[in-house]
Length: 109
Image (cartoon, rainbow, N blue to C red; front, side, top):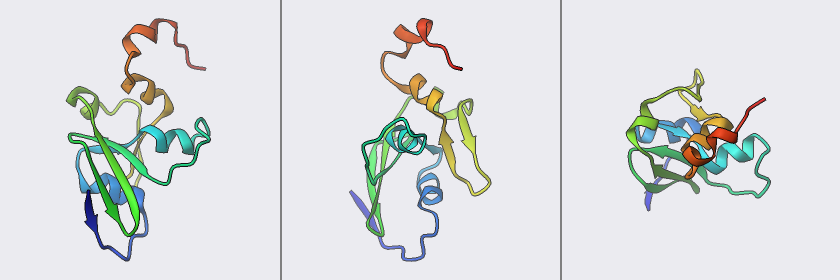
């Protein structure tokens, strides 16, 4: 795990999207923020071109490697003005294992 000492972190989401580029916040963190996952996890989870965990001012950011075709496709990614890129819950289904098998029966409101 990499450790960084950065005391003036105002937005850890922005930092998580900036340390490894391209990357976007995804997985459990998005599910918690959208109210789908109720189990608390303090880590910021993101996807990028590598798998790695880093610690910044006591906050852990965990990156998971995904295929490049998903990483560069911005469909399903919300790009905020403060450089935070975040997956939608629907995008998480596309990233999950078994998506190709189950997508025929999956409908979004």
